[in-house]
Image 1: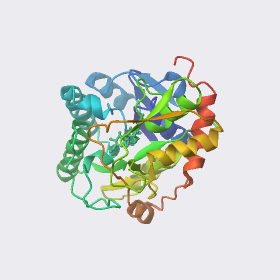
Image 2: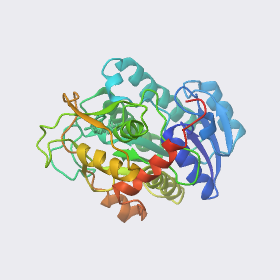
Image 3: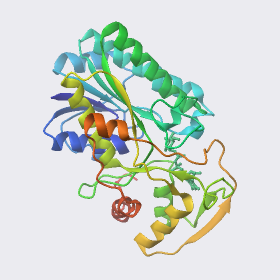
Length: 327
Ligand code: UFG
């Protein structure tokens, strides 16, 4: 299959690209390289460009026999989305709509969409299943939910079939390839703790330990980025085989607290470092754990990395290697 991948130079996108290539698919990757890294694009055709550029999209669809699209290009910082909502509505909704319009014009009917657990907001029940109410607490989550609603209408009206994948906490790195998590700024727990283990940061701050959890710190469901990537490949293949539109959670179903993550990093890296308690970060739910039974049952998705230490080991290997040259 020839697949257009947007955002393929990013952390998750580069891992999706590798899995697509491994599975024998032809790919065209578009990324504006604002956050992505050219070195992370391990193969296929690469176009530096923005999905806001409709002419470019028309050209890409006219020149290539694209059969399906995997759309990841987006902004994804929760904090930033609450300071600059326009950026999120514009880049995550309006620009993505461009892509849909061009797809419809070129009669391309399959799209896999990168969504987020942030669409749920504060959970009413754990584990969170796909039919849990959606009440995003931040603009980032809301922008993704808006686009899911647009997709539902494009299916109803244009017959465009989609699978929306709601990611929980992506982590880890491909153990073989030279790709991994390299955000700037970095806000995610596991890379920040690893940077502390490497001595790049002085200490790690725990954002609150008075949550109603076993040790007081927040609990999250960490999923290895290759397991996440595999789900995209299964999803696009299922759509091509005639599957109907659907929405799936992607998590491991296990929850680990911030304190447990820090302890696991100390164990994996064999490094000790300072840990300091700090105030709660605004908008953090106490516990987020996914039920991913639906995608396991429907698409036979089988995550390979069920242990937090295994996930952290792969990220540690990448961080120790020094990351991308331009970092
Ligand atoms: N944390 C710390 N110290 C740090 C960084 C994070 O204690 O230095 C804590 C956070 O407060 C949170 C946990 O570690 O309790 C995990 O934080 P991350 O920032 O790694 O991940 P989030 O759960 O906040 O965010 C993830 C995705 C978002 C998505 C969200 C869905 O990264 O894109 O899940 O709720 F929106």
